[in-house]
Image 1 (spheres, rainbow, N blue to C red):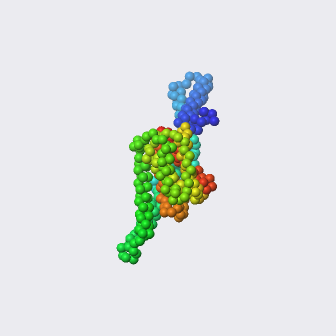
Image 2 (image 1 turned 45 degrees about the horizontal axis):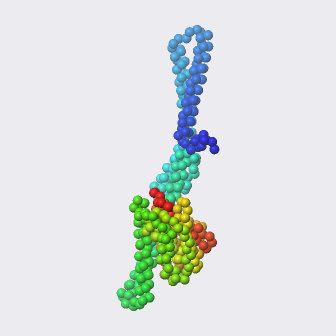
Image 3 (image 1 turned 60 degrees about the horizontal axis):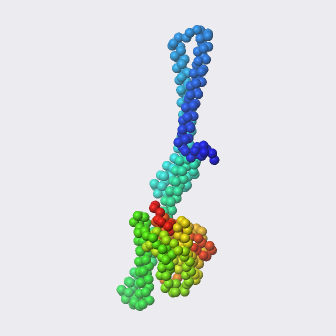
Length: 362
């Protein structure tokens, strides 16, 4: 595409300039033609009747000037009307869609009319409407999942406590362990909600950045899962490259703990792989396990708040998920200026994060 054509497509200002120049040229051309015609008529009159009077001259001049002005105004008005209507048409659609958003409904995406500023505005509006719709859906799902995750254990606790208080049940070790498990689940859920809220509100300037030997930090985090590894009779395969990154050590430790715990909770195999590789752009950490196959539409949602691929699925002894662990991972990593993602191949799932060598201000 030539530079002139690209400027024409992408710049409304240049279109207005060209239209105005065109209108001026038309006016000049019409005035010139009128003056030429008028001069020719005067020459013919002088040949036939001699010198004309001033009155006749002025009257004829005024007639031609008025005619030229009217013709120029009509032509300019038509050109401006057609062009302005073309500009206002997508703006009217944007106005109607904005009114729908204000009323609480989400409009269908607007067709992008061009590549200029109006086209860019339309594209950004579509992106904004999609983001708002997705945010509303996430909020509804979050409220539904929070109420569900809290209602079940609270109902169990209330039922057992009422039965104990009324003498219908007598306490034994198994019952108290069950009540303790329900209480711990509620505590864990509330704590994760608090952590997510803290990281969402935390500014980069308020984070405790320091130079960290990241391979040693990963090794320590893996070591903390030794008891769980033995209890589940599983193997941790660790492969780490040495490197130093500047990060919030507490936040990164939480990222690692959440990823490894997620791998244990959803694993159907006997091995969990933890790898760390250094790259010029930063350090990439990958935690892989064998689990149930995940559809593509599910893979895109695993980092959303409270999302669970199968909430009813048993995920190991005493394992109850909240759907917040991976959301916290994504929030912390993005605060560092990094990225988080999932690579799923059949039943092998690899959750990865990249941590820049130095924090990126957002």
